[in-house]
Image (cartoon, rainbow, N blue to C red):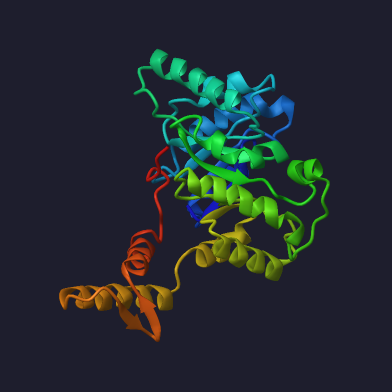
Amino acid sequence: MRSFLYIPGNRQKMLDKTASLGADCFILDLEDSVPPAEKANARALIRDYAARIANARAWVRTNAIDTAFFSADLDAIVGAPGVAGLFIPKVDTVEQVQEIGAHLELLEKDRGIAPGTTRIILTAESARAVLHCHALVTASPRVVSIVFGGARDADLMNDLGCEWSSEGPELMHARAHMLLGARAAGIAVPLDGAFTDLRDKDGFERDTALSRRLGYRGRMLIHPDQIEPSNRLYGRSPAELEYYARVISTFEAAVARGEATATVDGRMIDVAMAETARKALAGNRPDTESKHH
């Protein structure tokens, strides 16, 4: 889940291209990219196209819970073939998460779907959501991840009253705080937000590399050109994988000799480093379901 590419749900020509694109996942959008008059048409198109996207890679972004469109979005999408789960934007409170869960439970029961089947990913787009990230993602077992909504001039920036730069120090505290809350809750794949300056390809790569170092494992994308660098930078390089393989083999050999530590490339390794290596090798494509509350 290194790359989530937004696709406007009312743009049939763009939906037609999804099968040829290399994104790990797609966000078929019902929210900001779809004008009000097109919402119903977008729901119908998304139900059709989600079933065509292989390997459960189609997620749907609904409208916010406090809009007039939210209930109709859920009614159209819950249980639709091919839909991996829902992105829910602008969630600020535990009560909202619980209300969403209750709504989904009723729809699942009515449609004969196993309870809890519908997974959700939240988007933190306010100071309050970032501050209370841990409470939000633990408010329902349906929540498998959360997105840091730090796009330039978007809702979170406006709420914080901060400026934006390609280097990103203005949002660093909020970006790290949300990651901490998500990881403390057991979120395996915390997600970073969109980088919207399409002309600044070097800036996108720098920002994504920083995101990966911070601990994020994927991000939202707004253009197909961002897919390759996102997949590459959130993945592990061949050199990293080779190093971690040597860490495991060297440590296991040390344990077999009755020793608790070893050295690889001049670095001391112990059981914690070996566990990190195992997770790196097993988790080059992590599963959002490997979380707990």
